[in-house]
Length: 179
Image (cartoon, rainbow, N blue to C red; front, side, top):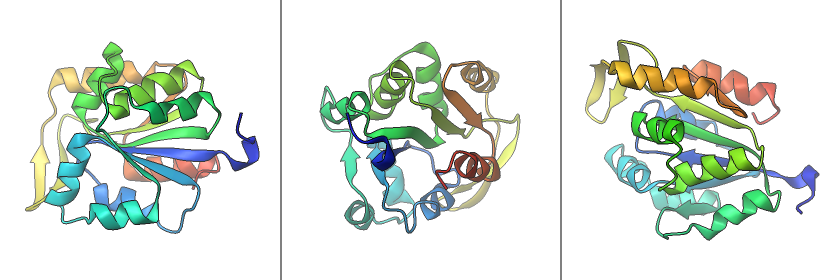
């Protein structure tokens, strides 16, 4: 078991560009986190002209490229004090709600719950209408009722804190000492 004084933050990126630059800015200057990238996250970073190679030079970086994701064993070994999934797509949220763990990120979330490691999830689709940054500029998006329902259902999960805004994410990280 890893010493609790040296436990790290596990930060997972999904295929969302919603506040992606702001989320990555929260990582600046940190030395206590490992970064987990879904396959879609790798694609989205390129779409937003974010250099994945440079990002992975700054932080230990794990990509969704194995069937069993052996790195997840670190959750059971006490490496991580918290999991942050930010930003989280509606697809990732739906899988979390349904208990599907077929990607690196959803597997991390499932195993964190089994280990009683708290998670913060910055869900993207939290209002009937919202403005977001797309690769070509600001756009309006209109989440489907099922997307909104899944976010509400996820709020009821043990060891899970769902945040609706970037400011709420920042406050949640500060509240638990992860900022």
